Image 1 (cartoon, rainbow, N blue to C red):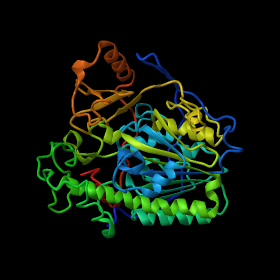
Image 2: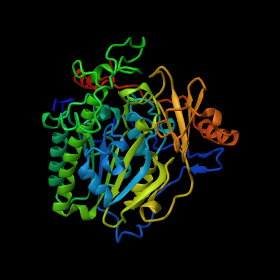
Image 3: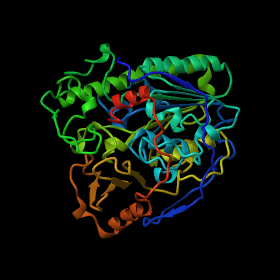
Length: 477
């Protein structure tokens, strides 16, 4: 596979100093539900004799849930992940707060909405006032990150708290090799290992032996086409477009939609193969018995829905914001969890599972009762997501979803409604069918959040090498 970047090794920590945390707040919404920011961490869980010694956190870039077999996809894109998920815990309705890497991963590692942690688009650095997971975990953990996306560079704050932080431009195998090397080096020391795979982020360049795996199969329609040429919106990144293939995604003159979908799926399979190597090592070494394993994604990918092709961030459609979440540990019962949950919920959950106290402000809910077999967690029955801002796309969108009800509001105030039970593809705006009561309740959530000004450090001055890597990923011009 062609490389999507180069390599860098950094010690953890931020150059900036700042007061950790912000004032706690409670959000009361028209649905009659309250989500309060709380501390977390407490006694060890009933399902475990003792807290896990280790944490393996695997984030897979641009992976939408519905292209995995365990979530109902017909192609064999993820046999290893599927097998792991079926014998552990999988969340059926897990969502990111924002379909861009920087804001989403900051929400994962702070337990806070972008409006609160301040990273509302990729170029922003993590404010020094925000405390990330690696900073919260105590010194008994040796903390290592092997990261494949240059958006998550150390100079943007993502190395804070890590003992070792590796930003590699190698392919998926190289990321796995480096992660396995660190597992060997740790040799019995309690660890937190974060592995961030860049694939299946575009450009879709799977290894040659996988390139034709799904081309021409039963789910391949050669007749679907996408435009290659278009006039970019002045002043905006030319890759942010509707109705055409983004410039960075062009594979020669290929314009068949399903060819690109097949390459996307092949990249998922490539990650699955390498993920299998990680899981095998944990099993063979005995580490799986004492490691909490989390497998998820930063965001999904739009594959043509709403005329949005092979990109993410401009819209809040389901393909862009619904992502997988699989959690595994021998002390937790295998189960499928249908509850609506969000990436802000993971940090308080992990801290409780690891028995680590934390009194900082959190927007997320502790999902530990769900992991341990409880039927539900009280406190919220909706998820909220929005697109990056300010001034990144022609329009801003935000959404609230509760059950099958999904309300979308644009920056101009226009509302659209989708009944996902009848229209899972979000193809018909049914705003005229929405009852006034439900409309008021859903809009109340949007009003409680909404886009608001943020103060965050600007993009650091980037070395030319790093700029080239970000340009190849379509992030900058």
